[in-house]
Length: 210
Image (cartoon, rainbow, N blue to C red):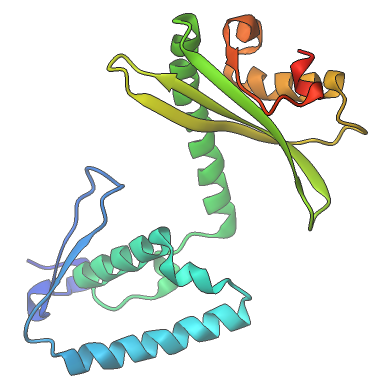
């Protein structure tokens, strides 16, 4: 079996199996006994140095090296390297614009999917929403977030934050809270069902009024 650009993966001792059926599953890797612990250690040391340089030069948080998504990217890169052999990073990395476009597309698609679930739940009178106002002290910015809770046909409880919108109105009085809340609910066509929703809050006066 030959891979990209004539690279023969049978010549390597690293055996990697992956699945594309479920993106949430991480690529499973198996290291052949032929690859000694000494070799692994030297590669790991080099990777540690590269990670340190990246974090310092690009001002990234140390926690990024423990991020699940970061590990998935590394494992996918190993899989591509196994199939195609040594290639330049630029050939598989997308631009900022492309990634941004994909994120927006995925977000839009995800909202449509969750909207149908929420509408079904509210029509069956089993949707609970819990709005909350919080502030980012560093940015001096307030937000109105809202978490949805509902049960499916198997009586399994689900929770999902459906929006978090900047609260830019001059004050946090009840009419302004309602305005921002409706802005968020309109994303999922829930404004017309507000009286059918069960509301749970911290009993703040600006929430209780409505």
